[in-house]
Amino acid sequence: MAADKKMETIVSFAKRRGFVYPSSEIYGGFNGVYDYGPYGVQLANNIKAAWWKAMVQEHENIVGLDSSIFTHPKVWEASGHVGGFSDPLTECRECNTRLRVDHLLEDVDVFADEKMSEDEINALLTENMSKLRCPKCGKSNFAPARRFNLLVQSNLGNFTSDWTKDPTYLRGEKRQGI
Image 1 (spheres, rainbow, N blue to C red):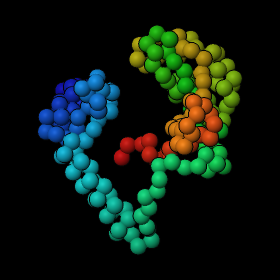
Image 2: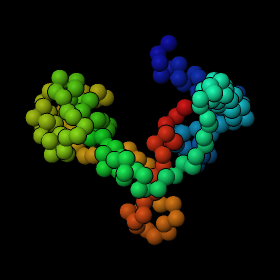
Image 3: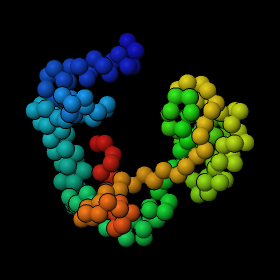
Image 4: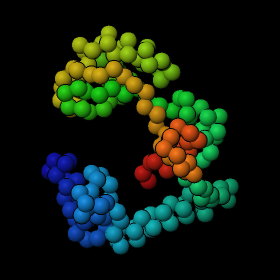
């Protein structure tokens, strides 16, 4: 059975049994975004409890912490995340797939350092364009690379329409799935 067919079968089962439902399904929903049903909530709680017990309660030198999901922007500036927590992305102009430039270049044995400037990355991209292929459509037609900041910005407490004023960021761990 193909991997996509397996996933379709699992998702169908999980929906029928009340584990998950596509979020906002009656309004068209979002691909890959699900709400937990009654069994899904219970399963998630059981997994969290087992993890908490194994990682926190069974170790006397570890304490648990449940902090807020928002952190003051100065924390992220001081840690270097605002200025440097980004990936160079390009977009395939044929199929609109977004791809990390450093990964595309690695596929043709060209090393791109994460500390390179956007101009340096684009020079490598342009120089090697004929060797690069989109993994989805196989074409070699890429837009110039741009830095994509991986922090999720919010406007907590900012009631203006200017999101650049007093930005707030979600903690990186809150963006990852368990």
